[in-house]
Amino acid sequence: MDCGVETAASWDVLLAGLAQHNLTPADIRRIIITHPHVDHSVQAAKLAALSGCQVWVADLGYEWLINPQKMFSLRAEYYRDHFLVEAGIPEEMAQVIQAYFAQVGTDTTPVPPESVQTFRVGDWLEMGGVKWQVLHMPGHASHQTCFYQPESRHFLSADMLLPKTPTPIVERPSPSHPRQPSLPIFMDSLDRCEALDMDWVYPGHGEPFQNHRQLIQKQRDRIHKRKGETLALVQQGHHTAYELMNVMYAHYPPAFRFAGLWMLIGYLDLLQAEGKVRVEIVDGVWQYYVNK
Ligand SMILES: [Zn+2]
Image (cartoon, rainbow, N blue to C red; front, side, top):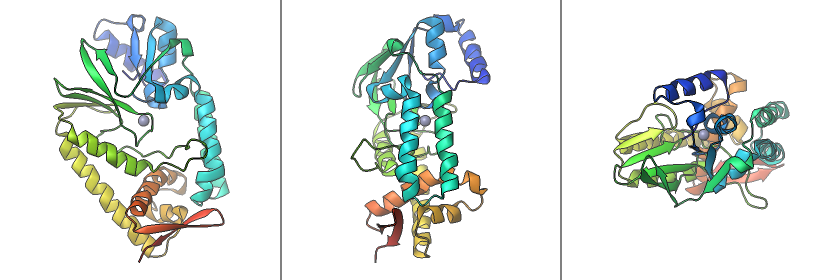
C-alpha cells in the first residue's frame, strides 16, 4: 500500500515498519498506490529501484505516477490561465501558488513506466490472501481508489475517510470540459461509503477506526454549516472567491489563506448546485450573487 513522501524521516519510518515484520525494502514485491499524491506515492520510485518491485496504480492515476513534472506544470498552467483568475486571486499570490506547483513537480521522482502496472475501477485485487474490490472514490482527488473486502468488512480508505475532512482539490479539467465540482463529488463518494458495511477503516493518515457512519455524519454536518456561513457572507456583499476567502479565513495570515480556497470553492459549488447562488462573470472573474 502507499509508501509515503520522499524524506529521510519517512524512509526511516518505513524501514522501522518493515523491520517489525523482519523485512527490508528488498523484500517488497508490490506496492499498491491509492492515489498518486506526493505524500502517498513518491517513495515508490526509490523502492522500485531497490527491490525491483511492481508499483500498481489505477489507470486513472498512471500519468501522475510516471510523469509528475508534466502533470504539475499542466495544473499550474490551468491555475494561471483560468482558476486563479476566475477566483479573483491577485497576481502576486497567484505567482506564489504556481511556483509551489512547479516546485512539487520538479521535486517528485517519477516511477519508471516499466515498473508500473495498472488496474481498473471495479477490479478485484488479491492482497494478503483475500480479494479486495477497487472502488473509485473521487472528490479529494479524481483518481483516488479505495479497497473493500466484503467478508471481513475492512475498508482501505486512502484520503476518502479520514478523521478530518480531506481537501477537495480543484483539478485541471480535461481540455474543453468545465471544471469538475470537487466538493459535491466528494459528498457523493461519502454517500457511497456510508452505504457500505464496514467493521474497520484503515485510513491513509492516522489510526484505524470504526463507526464510519458517525464520522460521515459529523463531516457532512460541518460542511452544511460552513456552506450556510458562506451563503451569509455572499448575502453581506462579498462577491468574489478571493473576498470570501479573506473574510472566511481572516484568522490565518494572508499567505496561508489559499489553503482554505479549495474548501470555499466547494461550498460555493454546493450552493450553486442547490440553486441558492448564481455566478456572473465580470472581466473574467466569478461574481457570486444570492438567488432571490
Ligand atoms: Zn491525497
